Length: 319
Image (cartoon, rainbow, N blue to C red):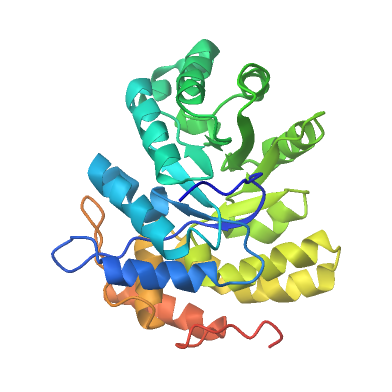
């Protein structure tokens, strides 16, 4: 299926990947999950083969299968953003070519882990990595911006140089986790002659992030609450902050449950929520991730009740 043209902006949920208890991919549950997310009014695209899809534990062949299932199930309905998660630029280019051939509309480029060893002082490494991917495909690229403290984030000067030298970078998924840096990136990137969209992934403070002017959001919790996220984004875009605050009151309990410490459990918690809502049959995760405790499940269940999300999956946005 050919890729749908896509300017990466708007509300882009990142889909989860259900597994059977033996940790093989549950293809039927995944197709059902994709249909649930893709039918939400107001979303611009979906993302697969990313953190929410547990891409770090998926083989190259499994990632190809995930994209093929996605395209077959909802590829005629929404554009698909495919993650490029690799420590080496040659492997990243191979993933990019495969995603383009498989029908993806854009690529979400994760920072390769070797950058954490000091690449902040070698911006040419970042440029070379993205250039290798850009040479492999002409799809628009979304740069995943990590916190600078991780060693994997791009200083603003490096980011601006990247945009100048690799114009295929059309957006960033911003997880800088610093309000001042986040606002600066929104102002600098979206005011360029050819705007580069800032997609917030500050899902634990999404309302605050969006009012700074982001042109979209890309979030794993969209796999559970895409309805609320799309409604919140629309309200902020319309300057209807009273409605946005009401919607944020619905989102807040789940954000607190999903993004509590330890942060690494965020997508495990989202799977548990989908099981509680009857949307997937099993919350299995692949190691080194571990299932959450019964106490955690109780907190998630309480958050779902407080957010007034029913088992049928329908969210009454006016309640």
